[in-house]
Image 1: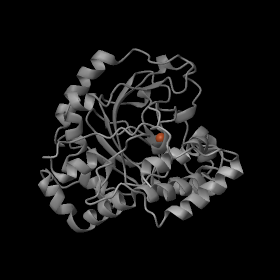
Image 2: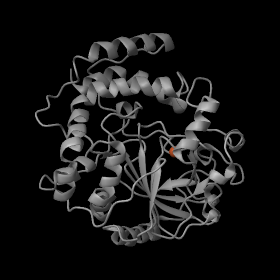
Image 3: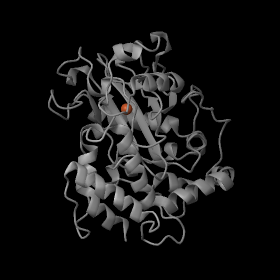
Length: 374
Ligand SMILES: [Fe+2]
């Protein structure tokens, strides 16, 4: 069976289970189901990426241009690079200035719309027009840090979050800037385990800009266990009060740094929020990386926006840019050994939640993205 045929059957169920931040079954059970499903689709890619990481990562980094300096090491789910000298960073900053000058300050959505205070002004086409972003995102200096954390050859995310975003956060677009809501509230991302962000502030950023704000991984996990967060019956967003009943506010780290500072952060491990009352507009680059097998169903029902690199590019660059680069010799088939188990599990869930499954000859996923990127 082809992966596209499997997706056609389970698309209605995937949408249903994903809706409202996995509210139907709860976040943790939905993540487990989604991971099994994605392992059935991408088992060979996962094995290929894991094996190359274990056996040839240093060689691939060298072939990709090598690292310009000793990469930072992530501790407790995060690391900062304040060198301002990462390869292609200067080009990224220049191109971002140009793009924001052209597109910032114009609200894309209605004021009361979901997350109107936060908007992405970067498109898939921009990755072609402005190659600096892909050069930066696939550079050995960045991929070395991300790969060692994920312990695989990483890929830019293709659905939630988009792999490359340039975002403007602006309180002027917020109907109620004084009331934190949605991604302005603490949460831990469920997209993949781990999901890693590389964030770059495009302007000197202070508390007035509504900075990306987080708790280190160890502290975050303490809160998660105490609250039973991701368990059934609890929502995706949690209040400051609930968090600070467990940990001290002094542990909070706002990403308030000068233009060009880079934050590596595991958003699937660290509680975080951002864009809270951005009185001064905040401009940020957000790169999202995953492994081959996500822990959500977004690839089943959203367009899969992979980037591309020419065949003549180093293998590492091609693998990071294109999540769907096939493993060598891969047949266009799901993993037939895992398939019966996955079908049995999802069939039982579909019956339990009353969703009718699709037919294998349905068309491709719709191109629209649902709200819910954070
Ligand atoms: Fe998030």
